[in-house]
Image (cartoon, rainbow, N blue to C red; front, side):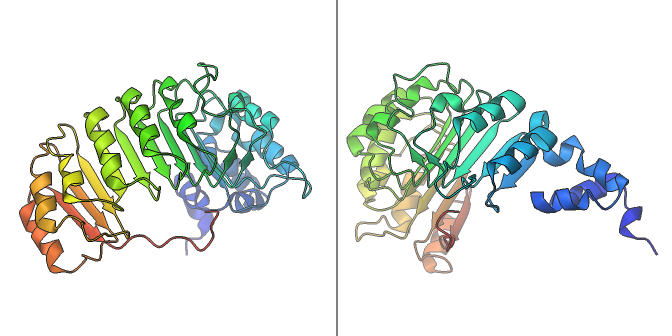
Length: 326
């Protein structure tokens, strides 16, 4: 009978890739064969450390021993400390990521206090930066920052970053490679600030505005004025009216549109009005409606029949994690 030791190395690597980092290191002690496999570069391309409360000493060991030039994407939970009063993330550690991990393209930080960390510490090779429930300083992302910071940044996700405001948003045009922007729960951003910023971010191809205090009509007004080339759009429907949705009519490049509840107002467009607006978008191929309570209802059938050229998805909003930091 075949055992796990009879499996080809390629299959074992696929299995090991599903293991948390701590367990990968533990299985390297099983035998010399597995130790060699755990050292394989392929296994350390994508690393998720959000499951652990990790001391800086351990993090430095992982960086030097396993990740280094192998690393392509990294998720960290922010709890990197040697004592309860120690800083969670240090500029030295982030600089080391840039120096020792030249292939690092994606960095996701969760619940990290970055208020004492200059943005210049981040690896210059990053193409995607995600900040989830993080604190940043007022100096972050401002227009006056060194233009050489993050020269390759293509995607920026700001999810529940309370300090983020209009001044930060208006500094984003200096990232000339930026094509994708996600704003989630950034309640300090105003309608005026969004309009002024999108005027200089006309090259964006994807925009998501979710759970913010901005009314949907105001957001769509700014988009229709300045983002005529946007391809993917996702926003919360709070404050959305038929007149607001009509602002998207004729958008020449829009391929995917997602309207997300559950903040439905009496003025919310009907399925027929949504169909009417979508039919004017020549490249629209995907329409997604989340959390509007239309799943399995007549509205879903009407939308599917009225937009035969589109993939229509009607479903509840995904359940939010009970762990607020995830």
